Length: 180
Ligand SMILES: Cc1cc2nc3c(=O)[nH]c(=O)nc-3n(C[C@H](O)[C@H](O)[C@H](O)COP(=O)(O)O)c2cc1C
Image (cartoon, rainbow, N blue to C red; front, top):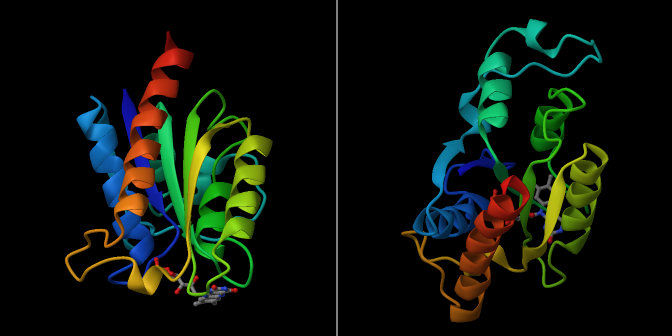
């Protein structure tokens, strides 16, 4: 079972990346091979709507291959003005229409405010379903993300840690079900 982690924040010390790390460690503990993609280190051009996504150049082929390798995706994004980040949306737009068909998707979203990041989850879920991915019911919205993690990336709140770990194990479980 191969799980690919994609973080929509390219910020150093990203809280979304910290959250994804907890979930992916849990997926790894459940038997998955986990690979993490740093969108900030990839040379990904803007999507221009062409049909042959592999012709974009840069690291686009590497990105498409990594998604193809995965049975499941762990995707995280900060709330940017009530939605997902442009970096993540562009990366998803660079994938072909069938790139995540039949793949399982687990979602995490972070926000600075008390209201959390439900709209970010809603929008990302909608996009992934539109792309024929199977978004699992477990998903985690993290309000006040700036306070949620210690400097070493560990989760301060025990309940949040449980939710993030459950997301990782549930993703592996559903991926096994759909592959079986
Ligand atoms: C352009 C931009 C827009 C943002 N919009 C919101 C927002 O609407 N609501 C909110 O609670 N936080 C908002 N934030 C804050 C981020 O969602 C929050 O700091 C998040 O935890 C950052 O994730 P990161 O640590 O992974 O980079 C915004 C941040 C940026 C840079």
